[in-house]
Length: 463
Image (cartoon, rainbow, N blue to C red; front, side, top):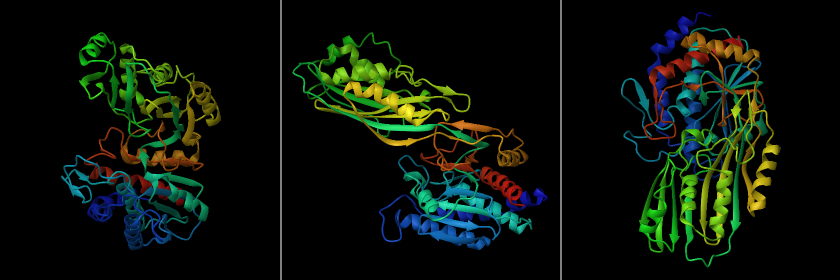
């Protein structure tokens, strides 16, 4: 197959790719209220309908699985490979300088919610297949493109499809980064709670709050204390040796102490500054009494400020495939009578979830804390020596000229629970995309590159 012809077709027809992307971006496919035939709301059903229209226009045979998943087939042959992307998006949030649900461009990049996660890559894959068809590529086997609508909110779409159909033996997803993600750490996220006895001490913590989601380093924390003045608190904390910003203000009951850190994803806590743990450290200098402070002291012994590898938690482990474990105390909400919190652990792919949970319980139950697991998954590992891995890495190298290599990550991709599945793109390393943030963006050249890479991968796996 002469891929110069395919590449030329993709280059010359990029406006068609962008037009299809614009149609999908303008549908605000955030998860909505379920109704009959629309498990994730009307917008998610609408975006599948539009994608089906586009796939049919390319000549693909489609089947809608009850608005959970759209299946698009290249032909009627045997199906060695499936490609799964998602058309649901996270809420737009604040801070946009562009209209989030209208594709805009500055000539180099396009902007809009979903342009990189994951509508842009999904459209690029569809146009990769379109290019193969239009350029006369002869493939005897089928490539199946699956488009879901709940990747951002629990992946019930994938589970529903697996309950009603069979996945191809090779599964790729452009919902990660290039070159290939073949190793994903295991995940152990849990809540903990404790009922507290009110304290009669004059100086005590009235409230403590930090964090909003379990999988992010908390960038702000605040505690209110009684029985202390601003001046006294400032004196006692004057020599605090910790690299974190904090302010002390007068409050109705005494003082409020604010700690400011830096947010980062839960899988990379070393990139953030944990305001929660920093604030506990500050409180330790104030001679605070009561059961709440005692519990915070005990938690700090397990989750000291600046440590993310679980050493003090007694869970420090690593492997050559995925690296070191990460342990993050990310949520805390407490008052005089109760305390709740949350922890995010990403453990090496070769470790076992059961062993991690045993250590969690051995450390927290003796403190009187109840533990409830909210998300627990074993690690995911596909050998880099699999023939299909070598095939798709070559496709990446042929297009980009860059070395094709396998990556290990702490986050979970769309295919975390699918045996043999790997993330293949679509983010280019080092490219700023603002994924999940304001002004989400992707280079037009990157969308073309994704299409060219996938065209080669599909052809080589299906010829």
